[in-house]
Amino acid sequence: MAKLLAFALIAVSATNVAFASTLRACLDPLPIQGTNFPLTHGIRNGPYVECEYNHAFASPQFCFYNATSLALTHAPNVPPVNDTTIPVDSNAACPTTLPLAGSYRINFPDTSGEFKCVTMSDGSDGAPVTIQDCDFTGPSNQVWSFVGSTIRQGDKCIDVTDGRNIDGVKLQVWTCADGNTNQQFQHSGGAILNQPNDIIHWLAHPDKCMDLTNGDETNGNQIQMWTCFSGNTNQMWVINQP
Image (tube, rainbow, N blue to C red; front, side, top):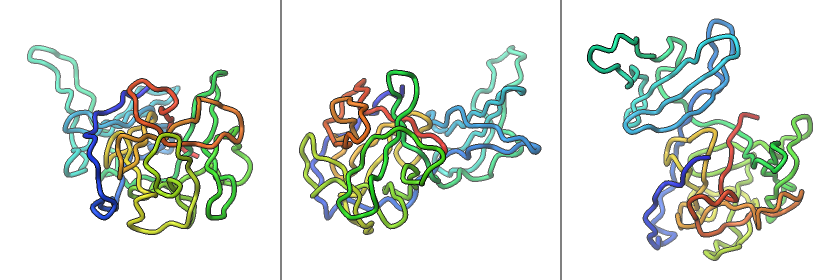
């Protein structure tokens, strides 16, 4: 699982929190000569963003990006002097710029090794955000668009109920509004989405993390915010394609 990154625990006034307009992520899948290569992981690694792709019948492929300019670049893993190994480089099919994040399922690995999905219970303001069995054939209320610092379905965003900065406050959906700090979150990779493992912080209060209440995988259990703790598996989410 991804390790929790260190965040400065600073009290931030709601009026001083900037709306993050963009979130970048590795393309998934990567189409190479008519074959889709699924993303294995996408993670910021020092000054680079590394996107690794694997296919059962081919060798791993990579896209490397400059983490500042977001431009496609050569591989950082140049071999040491006198090492004849050829370094793996970015595939020619890689996008020339790290793409904007798209739509994903936010999964929680259950005890059986399967996944549960973060779910919008219905489309009304105040509807609970819950954990449910993943349904890959039904309605798309488990597919979330990551747009800047918001996590949304259509015009509804995941929202910290009443903006209460306390352990145990539940998550709901509410009509999206730019600048509404109750609806702004930060991923463990900052402006770059780490995949598949992610820890989701409240942007206004980054010491609070999206948390599976009591670690209870029962369908309908409402997701909460809780003080972030490194290694707390209730706060470790798996970001997958729909």
